[in-house]
Length: 596
Ligand code: GCB
Image (cartoon, rainbow, N blue to C red; front, side):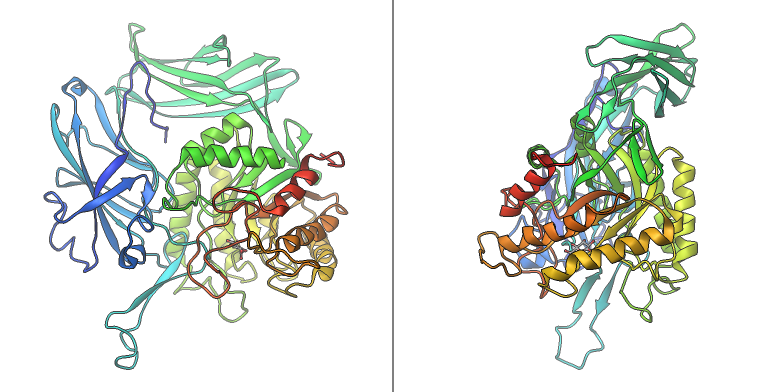
């Protein structure tokens, strides 16, 4: 699925801004056909943004169910011979979209785009209306999974009538709404539908393999590769092929050199009918001999697990925040991050391409674990065949969206699943096989919370990724046990699978401004001593190929006894200012004694 592009042929119309909004608190919108006419009693709601923290109403923030968005837009009469598409960057987690009261598309999954060809549904030279019903309900067939619990059978009077709770088995707040831009874009009626670019190195040449899918009556495809100075370095014809670039500028960590791959669809006379320009980085990735190789060179992942999360706008796209985050990551010496626990916006990945950040791209499969031998997760009434089907579909959507990003070097097919359960084996075998089938060029991982002695799926992946909280969720506050526990854990995984390991989470909640010497948990002093204990262990094991601290910044969570106004494991505050540990990390990752 191509990112909407404005060029000499295609046009994009942003529908970001203030929309009409109504939370369907009494669950009556579908029955009353709210999509048929303009929403009544609507309030102003910005798009993109989560709706939860915009108003002052707990009923809206904590609403379980549908909310309705609506706005009008004009289609210029000049768009008469155009194909017109509406594209929703994401709608969390289910959406139905109507144009002028007619259903145009529905979608399940809160973190990936969907679109509808609305060429025949809109009025040109006139006002049109788009309505969306967006539901935040999560059940076991969703990614992430969850379940709504009702308390109707509780003893009378104990709960208000109809009392419901959305259970989620992850800590981040279940932000909802239209988190990413909504856009209209045009293409010609004969158009380029998709393209896939892969890159290889052969001696001193770069090879850019490509395939272009077109719809309609295009007679031929012409492609060009243009360097960052605008100079054409290669060209070819045909819908699939390979372009050789002698002595290419490589896309490298910290140096996101981008070429532009331009494909044009020509008619039989050679006139350009459609064209699309894709940023392309020439680089290779491979896992070999316990190393992660980028362009044949061992790469050590330094960085963070992140969230798309901020005050007020929740998970809504904020390009100022994204650039600030990248500047903070550069300052700290980070070279990479994981899109924990869902695919982030395309805008953010485009920025990572350009800035040379290395990304582990994660599907929203989080919360599939109860850390129990008896209370299992992979079973008929929880994570089941239907969940698997959705998981496979979501992998497909994510790979189709992100396959051309040089920054994406590995797919994470889940975070912290109950991989000790026997039934998790056929489940993840299917997901791993489908992922490799869809993209044979990138390694895959499952981010693990299990212990090596009980895990059953490590054999399916290329890199073992571990989230470990010794000294926090176990032996809380005991810094002296961390190094020893981590050593044993690393050795256990490596002895069992012989694969390289990235520690994708380790961290301690830290309240900015709390100081204590000697340190105690939650103080700023503790956070770095805690991380340093882990680092002593990592540095001993050559098969450790990366460390990503949990988390980049503090973030909003559901309410809970261990979450005091959110998760405070950030190295930066939610407002993106450093805690003391940030300076120490910067020293480790960039200072005189930094080993990288
Ligand atoms: C984890 C999860 C992450 C949590 C973190 C924590 O293992 O992957 O989503 O936020 O632990 O702080 O507990």
